[in-house]
Length: 145
Ligand SMILES: [Ca+2]
Ligand SMILES: [Ca+2]
Image (tube, rainbow, N blue to C red; front, side, top):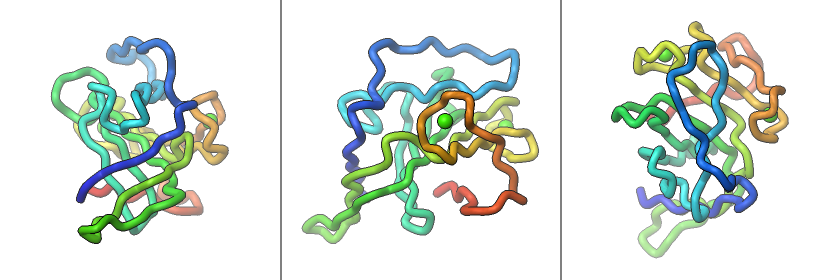
């Protein structure tokens, strides 16, 4: 599937944060999206749209060791079809609804390990994100992999 997305320029940050292995389980900031391209940041390995959840996922390798250890998912606001009838994501929410962070480095994102967060306000990482557990109401993040 061809991927294209227009992401809000407001998500672009001026400085590149420095990432390191965390000593405490905290949710790091999403790497800045460069030039409205979900794959514009070298830490972004892949991106995908899942029509079942209507979420747009970006997969990151924060430590640049070749594995996905951080993910975000944004609500998709508008899609279209191109001349080849491929779905093209045109507009997504400014900030993610879900975050995944592989705290224990086992290559998996598990709610049992407190590695999934939901940000109901969709206002970026500012402290009001909460751990997401399967018993929570609402949509369940469904990773397209
Ligand atoms: Ca894990
Ligand atoms: Ca927030």
